[in-house]
Length: 191
View: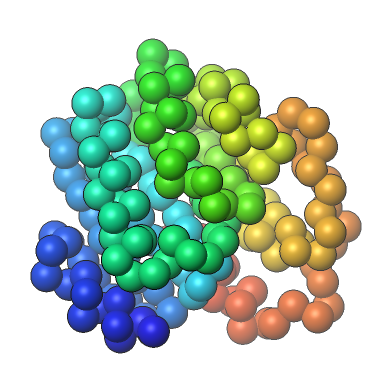
C-alpha cells in the first residue's frame, strides 16, 4: 500500500519524502506559511501549521491535499487528526473562523481531532478552538503536550469519553494496545 502511494505521489508533490515504511509526509510552502502534512501508519493524520497563516492560500492547499487523499484511496478510511500550532509565529485570532472552515473538508472523516499548542501559541490555540468547536463538535480536543496527545491517541478507541468543551479524561493505556504502535507514535510526536 505504501509503495503504491509513493509511486502516485512522488512526482506531483514537492518536498515529498518517505521517512519509513509506516510514515510519509510532504511540505508545501506558500508565502511565510509552511504546512507539514503527515500520515503515521494508517490511522493518524497530522497537519502542522508553521509561520503566518495566509487565508487565501489555505483553502486551495486543503483542496490539493484532499485530491491527494482521493487519488491514493486514503480518504476512504477514518483517521485521527493532530493539528499542531506549537510553532506558529503569529496569532491566529484574526483568522479563526475562515481557517476552521477551510480545514473542515479535510476532517469530515476524522473520528478525533487533537489540537496542540504551547507557550505563546496557547492563546492562538484557545481562540482557534472556539471557532472549530461548532464545526467539528465533540471530536475536538485540546492537548498541552505531545505526551498528552499520545495518551489520547492510545486510549481513544478504548471507549474514551469526550467531555463537553475541549478537554477529556482518560483511564490509562490499554494493555491490549500494540507496544510497537506506542513506540512509533512516541518517536514521531517527539520530533
